[in-house]
Image (cartoon, rainbow, N blue to C red; front, side, top):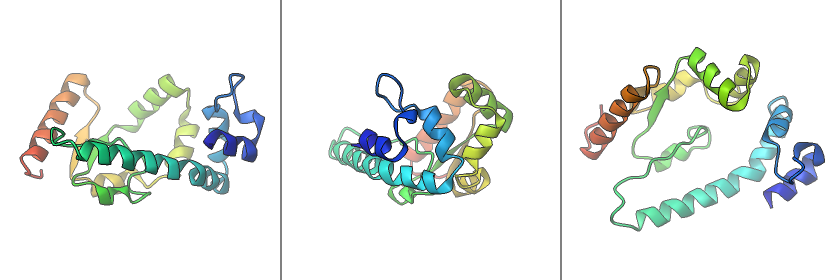
Length: 159
């Protein structure tokens, strides 16, 4: 259904030959036009929220599950933080973020900036968080911080 609606709205140019959505092509359109981004979000977000809610209900019904971790870039913007007991912000310097999105998605500084401008400022997200993890010193340091935060949350001792 999402693919059909995207095709009806933006046409074949945002699809690959195999019929899948070309996220880069669609991104170039919607991150240049706030109205187009709102249209895309109106198509995608209800389905994402429905799937998210279903998953949460399944996990919360299982007494063996002691917590749910969600990676949600638009958590505050979409008011999903209301469903969370704790918020964790992963802080990464801009130069490292740029390097990572360049390597993983081919984005340049301008593309990253366009996408950042469509979200709340990182400082706002950082201030809303109960915990801040620094992701700039390697995987071992990151894992140690995650373990500490999870232990604090399990102990119900906010940092």
